Amino acid sequence: MTRRDDRGSAIVELVWLGILLLVPLLWIVLSVSQVQQGAFGVTAAARAAGRAYALAPDDASGHRAAEDVARRALADQGLADAPLQVTVTCTPYPHDCHNGTSVITVRIRSSVELPLLPDVLGGGEPRFALSATHTVPIGRYQEVGGD
Image 1 (cartoon, rainbow, N blue to C red):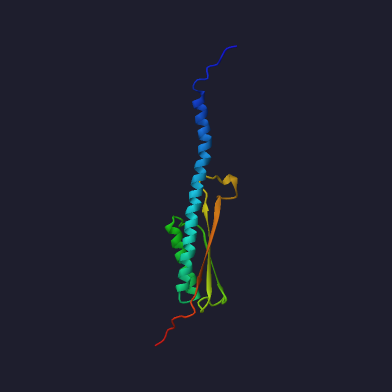
Image 2: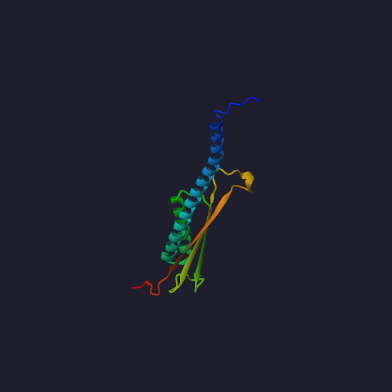
């Protein structure tokens, strides 16, 4: 029986093992950073939208202001093209959110695209759904217009 020379094969095995472990690890790091970026954006958008809605003079302009500042907050985090859904609810006056002692709750829904993932693994581009809520109470005493 002849003995084979195995010198140098450990380096080849180490390179292949490194590639097999490095590629999934790189994807995990990229995906986690993308999801974290989206989470920061959605949280900031909910907070800004709640404040903008509460400061608006009426519900219609409040809803427009909330969507506008939510879009800008997402754009500040690099998510200008991310889908956005803004939902505003009020208690105890659901049709008059700017009434005294009302509580405004803004919910933001969005999603981020996971990087380097082919469409073959799912229906369409793979996305991670994100949502955040922010609650703003309206004070009992309000400024009223007049002379």
